[in-house]
Length: 148
Image 1 (cartoon, rainbow, N blue to C red):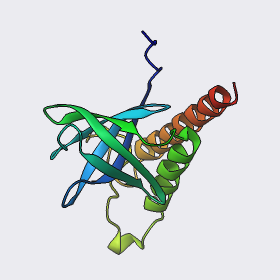
Image 2: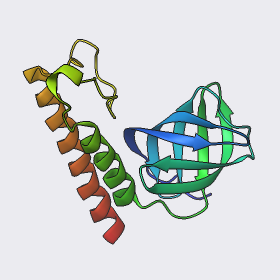
Image 3: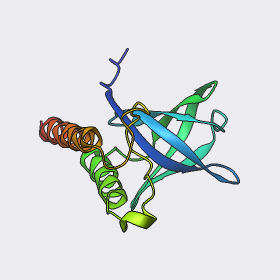
Image 4: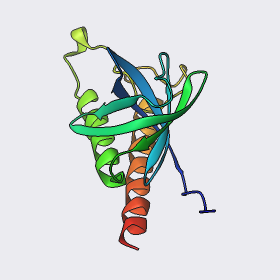
């Protein structure tokens, strides 16, 4: 029996195209050939799906479903660095500030407590930097693992 591939925990918001519609999903962990996702309308086991994050497109097949959680086996090996770059690019784009009177709160990539998720506070800026640093650190680890 082959050992299970190592998983890297992440929280990345993405979009999934199933049989007939698009829906929002959260990528909760990734491995070289698959991922665990959460979504309000999961596919059926055996369904092929498309997952998009910014310009990154991943195609895979749902292998198991348990409530709103489901596992996907990817057609091609997952490029961790590309996924994290897409997540960071998307997050950075959401942080571009609008004029003060027209500012809206962007949806964060990472789940943050609502008390911290307030615009313009020093805590929000610190959390933004911590999340960005975490993604950067994860990208470095993934790049190192990929080069082994």
